[in-house]
Image (cartoon, rainbow, N blue to C red; front, side, top):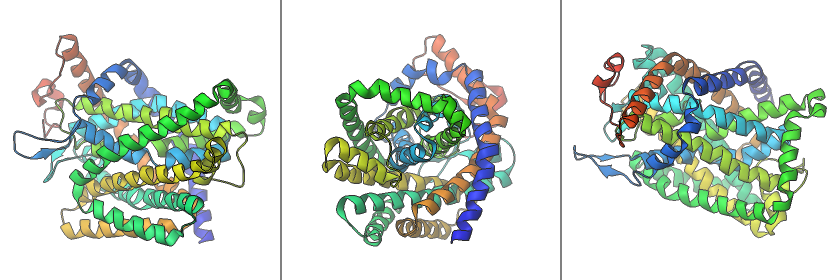
Length: 467
């Protein structure tokens, strides 16, 4: 097992040191410039659109449809998980407080990549049996004309989210519950596996309903607690902000290689947390029934901000208000220890409950990404059933493995699928820009609720199967 971990770590070093950091930032800056900062100038429109629909509905065809809000909730369920509590802690321990700054940077500029990929997912979505389906595999096949590329991506994301990421989520839940209640990993893992299988066998509508309830409750509760901690330590806030900035750019850190460590950890953990450009959120963005593809692109952009700028920042402040992180602790146990120092023993229990809600919602959101891509590869129902069982098995595996092994496996599979998706959206990005131009033209003409039909942009007419 140790040999396997060393091979995985070596592969991670190559991809994250030489490929992913430059490509992620390059794409993010490129799309920010080409969209004229869509993630900043249309922030008000994002909030307005999110309020348009708060639940699923039945369309004129008599079928239930996934609403914009539900699609946002499912994608946020996947984003808001261990990356926000355990991942931030890991980034600070390994990369120093400066890693938090780079998490903010990748969220701010990476949000433009999130807009492009989710808008493309809406453009290329198809009508499925239970809902619309789509995602990077679909725009690779239809947009680029390369089904093989879509199949490879579908395999990568199914392994990354259904297996690797769900192992991380399960591992973190077990560590938190062991720290708070002294429960054995194996028993927690069995219970978690049973709950997971009960939800994922219900399909996208059950996943959407569960996420639509759990995500707002967990996010608002955690934000409220974190704001309380920040207000209690308000006098120290400038000191913590100065620490983050100094560690991100300080000359001592530069001489010691600390800036590079902070940069890589911030981008790695930031990407794991907000998933901008990774190719995951487009799978659920495609399921929403909206009047224009740009609407879901904007809503998914808001998800990046919610995840990293709000929730990850909450965790970072909780940890850094407690002083220098304890190097003997890592992941979720560091976050628990920091909260215990702020509000007493109840802090550890609160984190254990919060991480259960955060990570369990991520498990079911992650599973859906895999399901959507299994359906792309094959329509055989037996294959999907087998995948569901394997996902349950990996949840149990994650409960019993080590945190280091779980994170290493997640890093390498995440890097591979991100490389494929970034290549696709760079080649197809102009189509998202055409859709954004159409949306803005309708808004400027006084249309409050823009509507897209395939004949509006002749260049995209043969692409927009469901429009």
